[in-house]
Length: 395
Image (cartoon, helix red, strand yellow):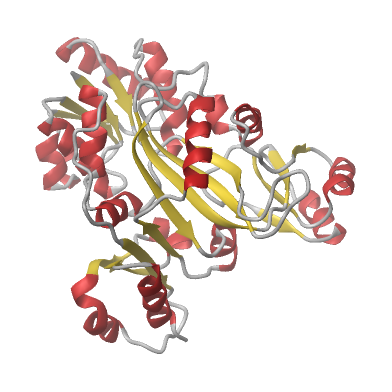
């Protein structure tokens, strides 16, 4: 089996996907824009061959790299980056090389355009916020008249909470439309809810081979826009309501043979036309693993290896990894250099060092969303996680 992995060096933990695929007997072929000598030793050891391109943005160059691999190794069975930024290019490559494992070009817009996602939520019988494509100030006023303030305005195609705005009044709405805009934006009614994600690895029949829940206490939009500390945790158990909504969404989108990251709000109060307090409301789908170190946090929380489960899905379309006897709560807390805190770095390590599973500086390219310094601990339960959060972030 030939698996072409696009940009296997970023994020740097993705060498684990390549390593487990190799262990399963897969010929793993990497295409990236990083010089070979700069790849980690782990990634080098997992790749059968690596093809460096000058730019992954240059489709012709990436196409030629795939063509070279196809000529040298035979038919390509998989093309994947597991990276939001390259999903559209992945789909185009699959179409051009007749790769049937994964999303192809004729379906990719279903997963990239937030406005298009609404139809599939409806098919899944999962409620979602009302939306309207933003065009003019006058048109926006009509949408506000229907749903009221505040509203959310964000790019129809976008990653995370980048360039997302909470509009509270007509003055802020006018200011938004007075700025030059070069992409299509989407307006949504504001949903007052807690943010959760349903993360899963799916089989060829869209059945979950692995399921996990992540709780995001602060709004990701607020973290990015207000430069707050990022705090979140992966819990050992998935509530039945989230399982039901997540599984239905996976099937409606036809998200087969993928690692998926689906975002939901849990309503804080009854919302007319949406649902009752505690119901899960669809926010958006991401047809790739959760960002940053979250896959590793899933491993710590569930006492498993998601990279191996993914590789087994690729090679056998089944879960071969055993189910754990005990699960934990894995909590990530970041700090920002510009802020001051009660407890020093050394005090944090002294108190939680035995439970710390990751502790490192965040690359500058990711620091806007993830902070400058991160601490990740494997804890017994959510109560202990809350104590850890309070200790690290005490001001």
